[in-house]
Every structure is written in C-alpha cells, then in structure tokens.
Length: 173
Image (cartoon, rainbow, N blue to C red):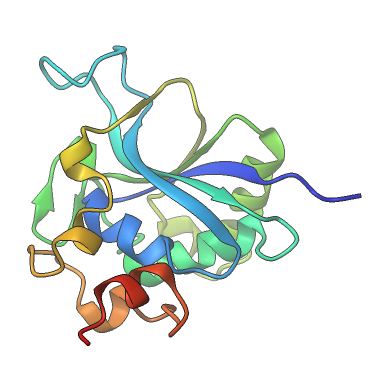
C-alpha cells in the first residue's frame, strides 16, 4: 500500500531562504511560503503573531520528521530567540508546527537527543492557523536567485541535484 505524503510547517527566519533550502531536500514533494499560528485569516493588516514558515509536503518513506528537523538545524541558529541572521522580530522565530501530534513528538525527541537541548529556542507547537504568503514570496529565491538572503548559496543549494527542477529550469545553455 502506498504511503500518503505528509505535511509539516518549518520556520527558520526569513522564509525565502528556508523555502529554497527545503525544496531541494530528499523526500520533499513540494513547498509553499506562508505564515503559521497568527491570529487572523488575512495577510493584510498589522502583525498578528505569526511566524514566517514553509509548508512542506514530504514522503515519510523517504525522509522522517526527525531528519527534516535535523536539516532545519543546518540553516538556523537554534539558540536565537526571534532572530535569524539580520532578520529580527517575533515573526522570524524558529519553529516546527504540525496538525499531527506524532510530528511534534518526533521533533521534540530529536531536540531532547541533543547535548545542547536545554539551550534550544525552537518552538514545537501544534499548528493552529496557516495562511499562504503572497505570490511575490513564493519560490522567491528560485525565481530571483540574486535577491538577498542571509544564507550562503552553497548552503541553500547543498542538497540540490543535477536533476532537480530548479537547476534544469535556470541552467544557462
């Protein structure tokens, strides 16, 4: 029986870099830029408590939640509160959000397995609200690879393969 894809929401500061990094990971089916756990149903208006995040559809037969969190740790400062690189504010906090309690348990177990677990500031919470970001933020660094990002390109594309969609689409001929 074929296993269904699952969805998890990862926050790691500015969503442009997080989405570009995550979209190339093994087992990731698709990504979408968005906002997690805000209090409103709109992207208009004042800040409502959300965290910039990436909705990640993944094949659990190819990548586990613990592995996804481990990958996230490659691009975040897990000790920083409300800041990643030059981006400062509550919306840039780090987190793992899901509607599936098993995902949250796996993320917490990964964190607890680390020697530095007491110092980690990553939120692990149920997803209470999700809103897709505006079109201008979707796949931003794929469409505009020279836009600024606090993550170096070597790290952003660490897992990109020669056969990936982004590479073949933007390769110079």
